[in-house]
Image (cartoon, rainbow, N blue to C red; front, side):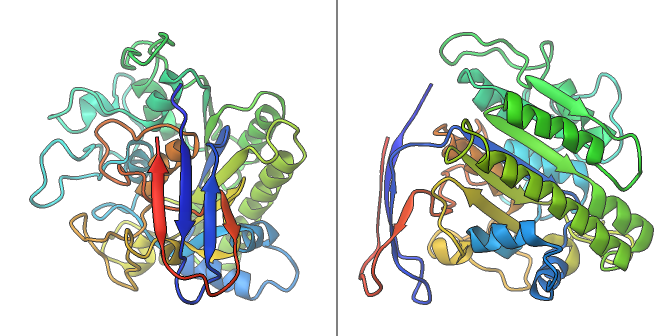
Length: 378
């Protein structure tokens, strides 16, 4: 499998401690978490007023990792499945203006798919196959897992199984089934993903996939029922925080995972009232993104770490032609692959250069260091 070393010297910005980043090699495990309906500004307020440690998991992601509350969803869609598909494929939902018609994944259905539906036959008709993070990880001989708390996530199992997955032409033939472990547990309490969480924790402790995609639905389900920012929604975020604490504790207590794992946490959309379908509404498209784990810089802002490749959009809604672009949830799939030492998803355009820097491998040096140097050795 492809492995690469990276030498990085980072100037994180005038307001940050300057750092030299030496990344001797990739990590061995990435846990890619999506907490459905997690609105960035509401979460930031909850953490700022958290005197009882209710949100200690999120606090750890901020203080011990690289983060932003001002990432962006897809430009045209702020609903669940289209955005998760962008995370996994590194593609926009729809064709951006003046870009080729082969750029987007084109899957806009946010409901339950038909039994024969795949991303390939119900998405962009100009593509015969829509590759994903699962393809790249699996085809390099590593193990993958998808743990989803909504039944409609079956679209990914239907798209990447032994029948519908692409042939493996990378090294040894590992087969067409790209998702080694698939769990979809959406039964039980409508605002609670605890049954799925227990199954994931067991796998994480006993036989962890090298790449895990884990979806928790609690804030979204509660937001639709009681409203974003309601007391019930805050409690759903607290439940999600407890899931995160379990994940971080399991990693730190594992001889296999400790110091070899990175956790990426983001979401598919925010919300206002009891909905989130308007992609032009700030509180729908503004979302948080966190990176935590092995050798990730601690307590730093992701935009400050990426002053030339990403631009903080403030409250604006940049499209896919913005240069530099904002940080998007769609960046996270190719970030996960970079952390694992693998190349980008074939055909992807979001973070296809794998230049979103989370400060991996960084070692702080004295203040006053001048200059910025970044070199990659592959």
